[in-house]
Length: 291
Image (tube, rainbow, N blue to C red):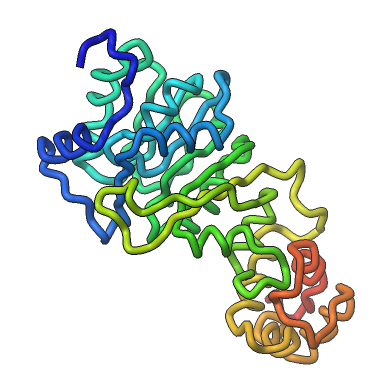
């Protein structure tokens, strides 16, 4: 590719050639599906509203399709990659395709679930084609760990996208929906077809936009205390909250007291509650249950 070629992005042939040279075969174990369509990558960057001043963190960059597009649009990009071969190859791909931006790129060779700090300025945006088998834990970890991330756009399995963006009362509303709502205003931001990936997955994909809330729900309970109620409520989602929260409260009677004090019906189910409702319940946990 000549230095004057304006198209720095990876196409299907580039990706297969790069993968062959590295001896890389995408693995199901790591939920790897590489995006091979430059238009899709451009669409992700556009939908994420990446700005020239943004410091973007990307999780699971793979061979670098999205990385290159992000680096063209943002001030700098930090990519977190767990795979040894991919992590070793990515800086060279960036240097070859975007030499004048290579100093704006940083690689963290690590498991995203274990990342506690990132090099350089604090991230302002998270944009990623998340590995589908760990998408929700990675997303929640990054939002929790890096409060400076204001805007997030992630590509995930379509049904996971539905769950993350589900409102209270929806059949698919659950733990991911509530925990994501603790951090952000969440919405579906589009669908992605299967043919833009290699290998083509046997599931559809969706984009999810998360805009950080100005502040988390007002509560005297900690985030962990609120999340403990959420986990308990949905562990037995068919049960009423009086029954589902019995273990959390120390007894069904204790759960009923906490629910009434929080202004929530003991006969309600978790799927009908907002994140603010869960926070109110957490504030009224019986003292005996906290020991």
